[in-house]
Amino acid sequence: MSLGNRSLTNVRQFNASLRSFSALPRQVQPTVIFVENAEKKRQNNLLGPSNSQFPFPGDVASSMTFNVGTNNKNAVQPATDSQKPKEYRTTSVRALLEESVTAVKLTPGYSPEEIVTEMANPLTEQVEVKALDCPRLLRKDLKHLFPNIDFKDRDVSVLNITQKTENDMSAWSPLMDVERMQLTSGFVKSATSVCSALQQFGYWADFIDPSSGRPYLGDFTNATLFETDERYKTMGFQIEDLGCCKVLRHVLWGTKAFVGTIFTDAPLDCEILQDIVNKINKD
Picture 1 (cartoon, rainbow, N blue to C red):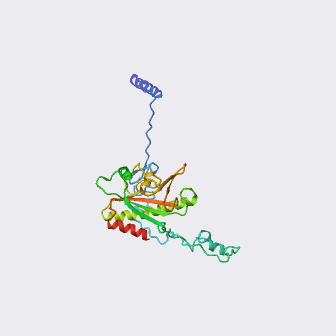
Picture 2: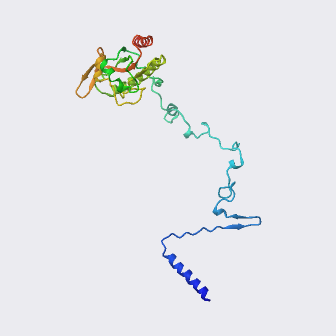
């Protein structure tokens, strides 16, 4: 071996010994294998698809690649109810009882219960509607309830829709809670219709959601007006403090009363407002 070759060999060995102590990761380039055939060289299938039309393993392609239709007579169709096994068919409980081994018989005089398709309107019996000018004590707080409305040069009217309840609102019970939810839902629907009618005549109108004490149609605000608020005293109601809570008392129905409040800038003597009051009181 010549001196030059011996020096080159020593340098390679020295560099190899340095690389063995290096902290840098060693990157090994993957080996690419090509298969030789008579026409061309192509990359091994193990390293990726060679033909974009057959991208899946085994040179398999989707039918969409060649626009193959999906309307195949031999395609599997979903089974109809009559074709399904008996244990997967839908049926009624009554039919199961009649077809059972024990031959369950119906009780004499049995009749299926009627399905309730629509709840009765809770605002159809013993309803009182009163329209009045907004009391001064309440008017000064309207800017907090309706912050986007300027009441400086507006006349504000209040409509209180009061209904007699079956349950005493001063004593909680499951029946009272259910009735109150039904009355709240009925009032929201009725008040929405009233406000829509007033707005069609160019008036502003909004109402207080009994469940939250906040305006239903207006923007959110931290101000609230519940039916047990002292300001209801200025509108003809009494507020009783029971110690644990407060309760509204109606002059005729006592604590068996539910009230909802609508605000509008329609004057009391306008035709549309009078028609609304008369219609609800008449019905």
